[in-house]
Length: 88
Image (cartoon, rainbow, N blue to C red; front, side, top):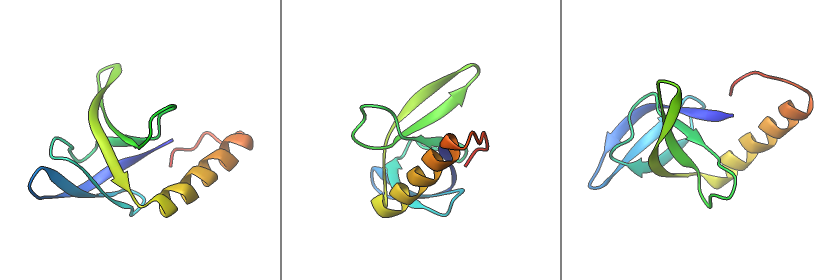
């Protein structure tokens, strides 16, 4: 499961972004609308990935509201346990 970046507001070295699930976060200026926020195994923070052809490029780390992210993670785990394949 992942989130998709919907819009950006640039600052010095980072941008404020909002995801398709209305979560706000900070990431490096290299992030673009359409990039995806993933929680990767063994990573200490969510990562911004960009789909390119048949692989993903790592854009960099993302900072998100941990409470909201935790809620989404619980929803994703529950959906996976029920066998749901919907994105979200």
